[in-house]
Amino acid sequence: MYNKPANFIDDQKVWDTLENHQTTDSTQIREILSKAREMKGLDMDDVAALTCISDPELLGELFNTANQVKETIYGKRLVLFAPLYISNLCSNECLYCAFRATNKDIVRNALTQEQIAHEVDILIKKGHKRILLVAGESYPKEGFQYVLDSVRTIYGVKSEHGEIRRVNVNVAPLSEEEFKLLKAEGIGTYQIFQETYHRETYKKVHLGGKKRDYNWRIWSLHRAMKAGIDDVGIGVLFGLFDYRFEILAMMQHIHELEAEFGVGPHTVSVPRLEPATGSNLAAHPPFPVSDIDFRKIVAILRLAVPYTGIIMSTRETAQMRRETFALGVSQISAGSRTNPGGYEHEEDEDDPSGQFSLGDHRPLDEVIRDVASMGYIPSFCTACYRMGRTGQDFMDLAKPGDIKLHCAPNALSSFKEYLQNFASSETQVIGNRLINETIAGMDGLSRQRAEKLVQRVEAGRDDVYC
Ligand code: SAM
Ligand code: SF4
Image 1: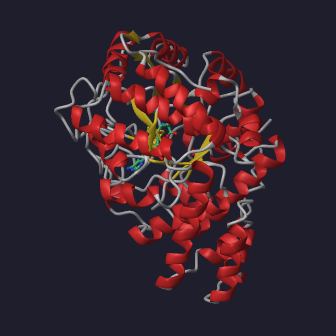
Image 2 (image 1 turned 90 degrees about the vertical axis):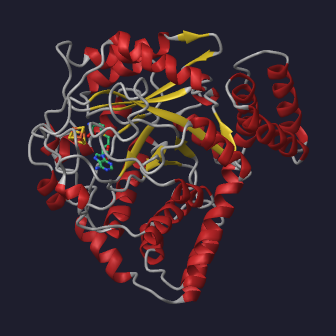
């Protein structure tokens, strides 16, 4: 089951929709933007029309609309996480990736459980609470058990002021049985990027190993959901093919998950192809996405799937990341390393054994300070997942905007916890001011909750949430 041809990705329909909705008509675009403000999402026709915007005035309106929708649903929150690369062993031959099997230019390494625990300890001491576990598609002798052991190791590391409270996972597609085992370890989101939905391109850039099988990969989120993992994340590696095709095909994937399971993906990632050691393709993306188109992609996705988190990694520069917060990004990584053992050897800022080069090298404290100076509240909250508010339950809560009653207070208390336990004095000043100003601007139940939670953290309690 779930390895048959994926008919729900219908290339012809994507091309027809793009062809039939080419427009420069400002009235039509404005109608779509006004529909988007209702926050019920957009259909493929609307999305195709929005990709045509090039007029600076309309582009400005698209960006403003995305900002309004983002602030209505998410407020000023930005969730923080760190990737943890446990291994760069890989049996696949993805032409864009430094970890591909035949690349002799990197040092191969799979961390032992002790080394993983050490990396986690470093991340906890910086203030992280969420980890995204990442690995190539080949495991040491323990096989898939290696991933399960690693999740358990991560949750098992305790430090004076904290622990990792949510482990999300980005590893190669699994069987339903393996997904069940992963779920039993208490993971948060399982994420996997299709890379490109365009079958011909997929074949051209994946030359060897199991990843060559487009169908095995595209059905993986069905298998994950069937196995009970109800928070799943999707993504496209932008730069491999025409971004307009990719967004529309990704919409088809989202609609398919919604139709089958009643709930779409929890997150969408928007990685852009970055240079990678030993990869000619990564150095010369076949369909480079310009900065302006990249901003457009984020804004369109925010309007198309308003309740889905959008993740922005440190592949992008600090400046690009800043700009996309206002366009709909709701989760960011910070202080990342993409080579196994990278947190222990932080001095090697751009280790050639990393998966790709990073655009933002700033440490967590600096990112937090920057984000807070822009008025965004860095959130380390993991409450929803721990209270069982996942999948359909999360969406039910999120849709009427009720999530604000939980998320806004929880973001503030988790930020306060960070400031007290881990921040530099400079960041504390900026952060505490932001917390006070934010609470002053709140009212009703969310203000009461926020005040109470923050006071509890001030009194020395960690990990308080509602
Ligand atoms: N190995 C697994 C896989 O391929 O699905 C999981 C982890 S892989 C290390 C995570 C993601 O990194 C890939 O899905 C791909 O989108 C992204 N990636 C690979 N090479 C990249 C590059 N040169 N620039 C940006 N992102 C890249
Ligand atoms: Fe391996 Fe994933 Fe890199 Fe492909 S993208 S070479 S599967 S680590």
